Length: 539
Image (cartoon, rainbow, N blue to C red; front, top):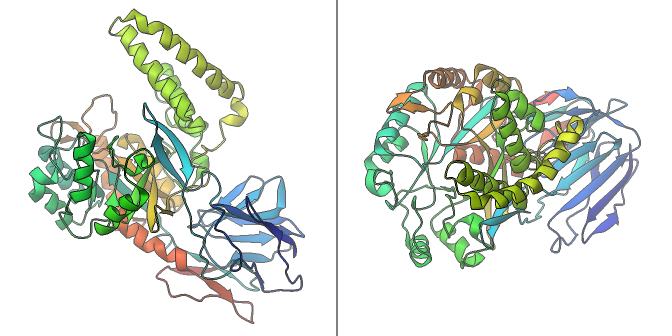
């Protein structure tokens, strides 16, 4: 069944010797290889016949007429043209099949943009996107299993093969009053979230909420079942000396605060680690001493709207999907959002983003402030952007359906080494308009696809231009948003959707890391490890 196996990386390029007569299990020996000089590699497996079917993220069989990808939380199961099932013995890595050559299966470990982090460097908050730093410590050699009867697939959800809705909220606009409104709203709809908070009351707004000023209210969130997490340490930025002193000396106000979400450009942020004066060792030591295990990568796969909700489905993260999700808007607004998505998600290029931000800022200065001297910088940036934008529009037939590069591999949760220790990193779905994001159609789609989202939200945002926001006016919940959350709560109550905190989700998913399968003499696949992951046979 297998024609050849090879290992490809920047430091390793070798063919694997294997027994072509092996009918049940093909072991790919990696344990004796030195991965110290590589952060990414592929195992290329060529079959002597084509791959006819692929087990999709929604637990359905699909063909290979398009490129197919399975990440660590999706089934790694295929079916060859002769009907033979093939399954991975471990969930680590990514399976990828190219539609042009369906004889080849790539087993990829940390390919570009599959597990990314944001690094702010230099001046003007310039950034780059880089791959996480990995440890390749395999507890068992990757192997292909060839079951005679059935494969095994495992549920991502605590509720058997259901959808997952996880909310992580940024507290930028929280006040005591709207914290109370939010908490009562979520309690009424039985929704649990991971709620960011500022530890210190240092803000340009006197009524900005913090643990220092509003401890009693935030403790009520924990009592209601929510998870609290750091959103940096303060809303506003102190000078560098004070900021680093805060970071080095802060004391956790509660036990079991595991999650840290960067806020703005705080100098001690994870996303500014390459720029700030903290060494990796010192930065890691503070996190470890404070029992922080999980960090945001400062990346959104895209923006939720009608038809864009499931982070496991890269076909939702395209220009066409986003445009269709906003077809109810007027032409000018749709064009504006499309251009922004081309720059922020299709290209996701730092230079282009800076030019876009500069052009938008200079446009406002010219139009609203009548500062004519900014017209030439605006024209220069606009002209440079126009070339890239028009190249996408001219090739719209192909570019419209191309998944955004930071959503292609459906990144959700992965590990990264800062100095010596591994930390969990998570990637989010920007969710601003709760009328569109959590519409009945989107909730139904999420359930149908057994999908997942880890939402990046601002539940207390007050600005009127944020359509579909939670709080429409002072202490008043938007009626349509209320109906959407009420429906979501019903689906959670009926166990059609699991609604964990971020730490609960990661704790459950950690069993995918240690899951090991094997095959017995009768050709039956079984689980060697003891995990809490529910499984079912797949013929």
